[in-house]
Length: 352
Image (tube, rainbow, N blue to C red; front, side, top):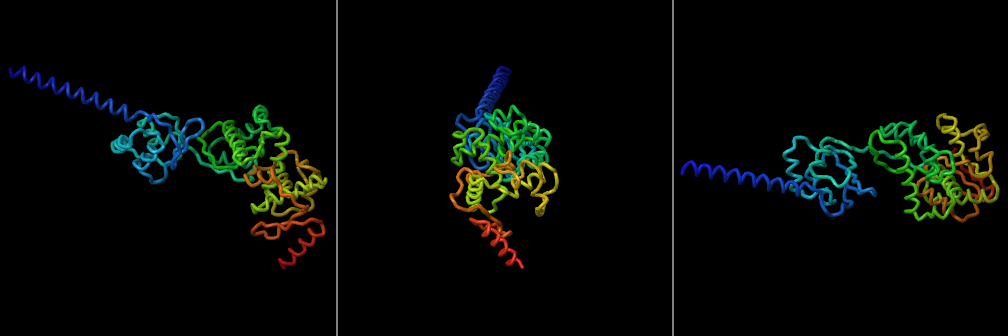
């Protein structure tokens, strides 16, 4: 009887242990599984159009705080299970920006954040950046080499895909803050920035799709010049109006920005502090001092202000403008050359 009782107790304990193990396994599977609800954007979490999640873990942020945000975004199924994982794992999650393929289990996601895998590089392409400047930024940040980026941005197949009639994607890579993985394919980086450009046109209400590729190319070219000329946002549309008037009257644009583009991007020289008469006489198609009409293509990446100005120039009678306050970048606009000269003389007198 005693042996039989011992056997019964042991058997019962084994059965209970087995049932507990099975129950624990089932609970882990339930809590570890991705949520059935659709993920949404929340603080520090953005759901991209391809279904992936961009998760920003801040410096000093605890795993528990991150878990709450991930639960609110619908990426994890249980805050309790996340906290248990965080308590029993030896490594802390690492700060950084991660691009995660969804759906993902909690254990797998926790491991990714612990190891710092799929950490994204955050970089900012400023408004008015040229293609070469953009390439240098990506190389400096470790995304791809400048050579590969410039080669991709000059790919005829890519240019035809985006209906760009020029020789490069200059002007069509939107200046913005981007997140890329290290050693990212250059062609995909170009595509990302070009896609952003066209999506921004839609967001700004600029109907680019009603234009032919050639017409859009002219708008982008004009916007790129405006981008490099204006300093005060309120003046961008006024400057666009001046350029529109000069083009319609057959006058040359005489934009200093195009001369600077020749010197820095074509000749590869340092940015000039000032322009001399010899500079405006450079024989080059981009020289709008000696060539009528728009230059052959964009000279920089225009931002929202310059694009809106190019699509909707102010209706004015001005034909000239000059800087009157170098500190603020404000301009004086005039209708005649005499007024333009007079404004320059007043500016010189005021600086004495």
